[in-house]
Length: 430
Image (cartoon, rainbow, N blue to C red; front, side):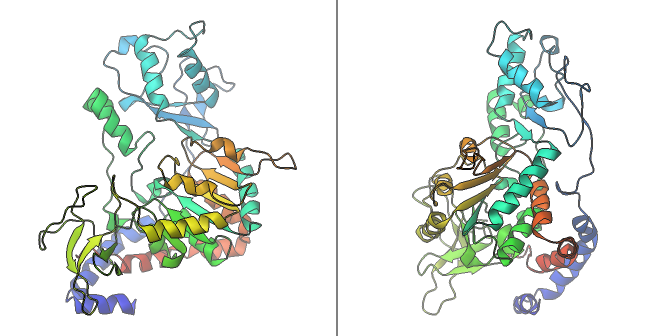
């Protein structure tokens, strides 16, 4: 705390920052400390949107049941939509069995389900966004297996994507509310098909989720050795993970580096905004100006500072990807959380380890590597694990397996204090 106060005093804005921070924290801390993350949401019921749902128990879906959430384009002609009770914005929820039957009906002309051309197109469009949730009993079973596997691994690493940060208030890229999903629907079907855009918090207001904090705790315990992340939100570093135990493949919004000597500076504020205070220099690959307007403070350097964000077309930083590859080749277990594992070359890292690699995946959507989680070992049991659902829900169960009830209560009860520390390390001042 004294460090951050001294930094603010030097910049002559500590008093104003402290005053505004206290005001805002007074409003937000109770919400954040008790927030209904995906790990602690009140259980609610859903309704299967297949009108002829034949599942025992009827169309009602309890929170602990397995289900599928999808989003299609919104049809202009309600008269041509008779099989599915599509909700606003083309959203729908189904029993897993009902969704499978609907998918079969899009291909099988002999199916008892009669689909109009419009509804067939809607189902196929919705298939691209499908988010699966395993039943509560299935998640509990897999959490026990995952806890046992990572605890007994020699070198467990973690690979994370946007899905671990959605509970913090940041959007993901695919799925029913994903950035790319909305972009594609807007392009193909206009504003009616895209649905209403979800609000997103400024990056400096984001705080580590249950999963972020759990990973840091497991690193402190020596259970996991290294984190490889595709995220740029800085939440892993904010949660406490040391710089030498993480590879942020696509950069960090709170880190800038010198163009000349490559010294890195970690800030309390986001460094992504472009500046007109210094000469513009567009990157030859992504055509974006990375300069932030500040200069290197290293004696004799004075080089221009640039953000570390990797845009489409940019190369990954050699030292970052190199460090990730070194750790990946040592791994005998990879816990992949919140990623569809679709982006190359990052997704190659999860298979670089000691064979047979124990691949543990938790994500709402399918990935190209799902089948590898189910490969069986000499004991005729899967060497890995595949969980469909929210990372916070899974990690809460994993932590309950790895900590005693007293340890778990003490650690989870410390979130209020941790939120105070996080708040001290974030400002909007640039």
